[in-house]
Length: 252
Image 1 (spheres, rainbow, N blue to C red):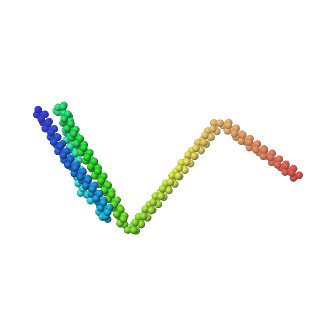
Image 2 (cartoon, rainbow, N blue to C red):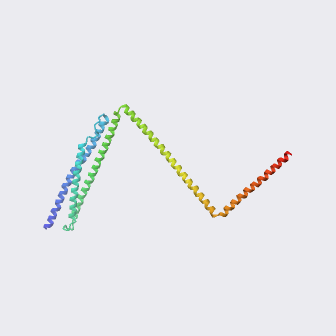
Image 3 (cartoon, rainbow, N blue to C red):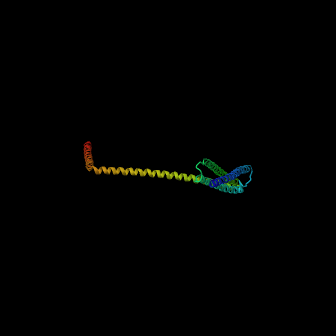
């Protein structure tokens, strides 16, 4: 009985610690969410003030808010780690041999604390991500506005020089595109010529193969060509003699 009572006290002590940490986390998360909201609103107001005036102050003077954000994030992460440790101890308790087998109520309580931890963890990461996104967006907009104001406040000579630089840059880009197109055409022509050369070599190789396979046919073709050439010479000689005889006959 004493062991059961001690175990019960240990369980209640763990539950008490878990509830205390959950309450602290709930308050911290509410303050953390308000900090993110106020940061976003301050950035919007500052953006509107820069839009309707020529004030050149930074977009966000939120160094104190950033420091507060980092501090609160560390505190919440520590509390989440402590609560996770308490849940682990509660899980070890429910699975220990000294606990009665009928511990459905304990398991239900443990699951409820785990769900709360999961919800708080998800809410913390979501709020943190939103805060970082808002800060990054506001810093980016502030940098853009500074560049715009710097450009507008420049003198006419600087503006003219900037325009000339931009035009020269555009000319260089056009030249690069023309060079790339020329190189592409040259590469395509080279590939085409290489392909044609391969085809001619293949055809020549096939012709040599056929000639080597059929030497008799090759010899016969050569003989026919010689006979054709001889017949052409004979026919030409006969035509020449007949022409000479006709000319001689015509003049006599």
